[in-house]
View 1 (cartoon, rainbow, N blue to C red):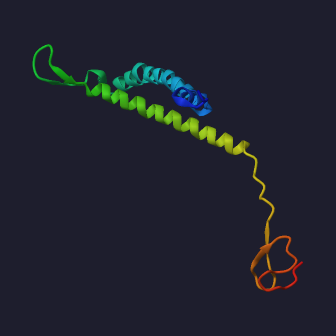
View 2 (view 1 turned 60 degrees about the vertical axis):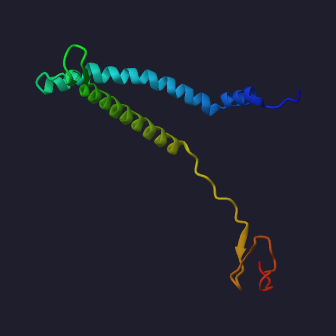
Length: 143
């Protein structure tokens, strides 16, 4: 059997790419960081908001749909907490990306401009090769 890539070979090549592994590490770290942000919102920010609003507990905010013990409820207070989680995560990611961009800009070496490959004929003003001694357009001698 000829050694072709096949499905398994393509999968191995896909997994071996550096950016896929970086993405996997980012997702794992993001999941762990999400737990920290959730704790920050649920255990620190929401109680402070509750204290500032006179003891209101957002997690208890809901609209009961129907009657009885098993009635469905729209718990929009939990949604408010999830929105706060998202906003804090977005803010932290914004600051991280901003810091990375600042560091990469500071570390980045200025690129040297490449040596010119053409020059302008002083007589006809057309662009000619840098090592030309005669202009191909006006046939003038150039330095």
